[in-house]
Each structure stands twice: as C-alpha cells, then as structure tokens.
Length: 420
Image (cartoon, rainbow, N blue to C red):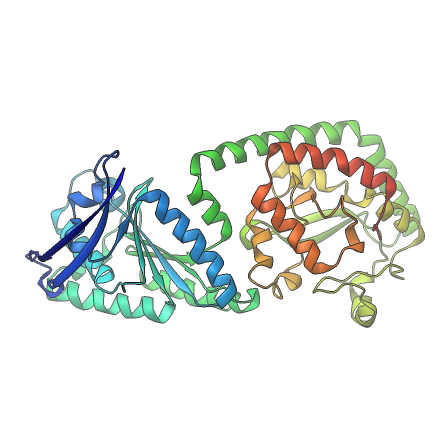
C-alpha cells in the first residue's frame, strides 16, 4: 500500500551541514509493505526536500525520461547514490568523518533539485536515485564546485582523496543527440572522471541500462540462457559445418588468390563497444578503396551502403552472399561472445556516427547473425524500417523469439530474397 503524507518542518541542522538548512514542504511516498530504506538511516526523508518515489515507480519514470529525451533532445543527469556501508566507505571499519562528508556531498545535490526533478529509492543496491531534468555536464560541474566549497567549510575536503570501493556518485548523462555528437562528449567524460576519482563515476546512459533497471533478475536470467544457447549452438555448428567452411575457404582462395580468405572488419557491438567481425571475403582486395567512387550508386536510404550489382564482388562471391555463406565465420564471433545467434546486425562505426537517438536503441543488445530484418526481406527493406524491426527485437525479444527467428532464417537463406 502506498500512502501520501505531507510533512512541513524546518530541517534540523546537521552539525557539519548548516549551509543546507531551510524550510521544506515535502511530499513523500511511504510503502508500508516494505522495510525502511538504509538511506533513511543516514539522511531522513525530511532532509531530501522533494517527492521520494518507491523503487518500481522510479524505474518507470527513468525509462519515460529516457524516451522523452529521444524526442526533445533535452539532456538529463541520473545520479545513483549507494548507501551500503562497504560500498560507501570501502573499509572494514566505519569512518564517521567520511560519512559526514558523504552527507554534505549528497545534500549539495538534493538542495539543487527542482520540483520537476525526480527522486526515488533504489532497491538493489539500497540507496537513492536522482534525475536532474534538463541538466548537462555544466550543471554537474557546478554541483561539483558547490560540493567542494561546502566540504572545505566543514574541514572535510581531504575525504575526496580517500580510496573507496565504489564512487559515492555513479552519474549517467543522456543527451538524446545524434551519436557523433554524443561521441564528442567522451573526452569530456574521461577528463571529468580523472579529475574526480573517488567521489564521481560518470558515463553515458544506454538503453541497456534502462532494461537492466526495469527487471534486473529477469535480465540476468535471460542473459545467462542466451549465452549458453549461443555457445553450445555455435560450437556444434562449427563442428558440423566444418566441411562447408573448408569448401568456402577454397572457393575464396581460387576466385581471388591475391587476398586473404577471411575478411576482418571493425564493427560496433553492445553499447558502442568495438570488436573485429569475421567473414569469408566475397569482394576483390581493393573493395574498400573503390567504395568512395561507388557511393553515388548507393541504394540504401540511410547511412548504410547497399548496391545490388556491386562490381567489387567477384563472381563466386555473389553465390556466397546470396546464401549467406560468407557470414559463417561469425560463428567464431558468437563462440567468443562478441556476437549472438540472434540480434541486430553489427553496424560499421561510420554508420553509427549518423544514428539518431532512437536508432541507437538497437545497440542495447549483443549483435547477432540473424534477426527480424534477415527474415523480412533484408536489403529490400529501407533503413528506417530496418531500424524499427531491430528495436522491435530489443523491446520484445526473448528466448522463444530467438528460436522462431532461427527457424525462419533457414527458409530465408534458401529463398535468398534481398541478399546482395
């Protein structure tokens, strides 16, 4: 049962946090069916000064804010404030000086929250989540400076240099901007983390973080089940298809003896992580150099390059691509964990730079060998529809969906629709 209570009182001053004393009108949610949060043992709800939502409601609001930012490109900061003693202090013995510094630092953030900002309890680990709407790195830097001033006044600034097991503030930023603009933030994020080692850990927020927040236990089970299926199925496929793999390798070598059998290419995996993807080479060795002169013939509507009669493909290469035989070496990518049997196709870094926010949602899962796009027409489908199909998998995909898509893939490969 969730009950809404109204509390009006002057904040009882902390001995070392007097700069934060002010009158609050606080509306707090109290869940009578749950045990009190450990956060309340350090800072009471009266000191927070905003609506404090239950954990499940807060997760929903975080997801809504993520999707809202995709539409309006107004950035937000998400603070995850952990309160477990060992996470907080990082030592076997409770350090009261550090805890006093922690209270001042946290209250600095809480006193900056607006009525429209979102504050809620975390359930695992115990603590508080704070979403500062319409806030970017400039806001975070301003908060850091205020925190530093308040700690200096309290004579506790040396606490910032203590080595802790986990940072006090695990901060995520989401801008809702095009990926190439987001990538420009990475240098600033790295610089901020280096300067604030110990108290802050700053990173970009990904949709996979939202999925994990929504139902953490279920996501762990799904990940474990999917990884087991990927490892076993790829290992069995490599063993059973070894004669076919050798035949394809021989075809490549005979067709174009100048180049390597395996084509290696950098691709983008989950959350933007790069990895090397393997394919049987189906193009002449100078294919990458000739790509620029052929871009005017691109038949794709997005940042990808697709050309039905690509002159860079040697004759037998067309056969390999038509029946997706060139993709077979990716079984080794699956075995190593860079890819999955089912998932959105891994894009090129140059393509990802042009992604809009909603396109990037497809990067929140491990890329795969096959997905909805492969069984729905492949290259005959426009870029926007391709992205929608991949996002459909991100939102609704499960182990049952994977088995259905694997079965449909065999039919799609034999029909070879849209394969070029």
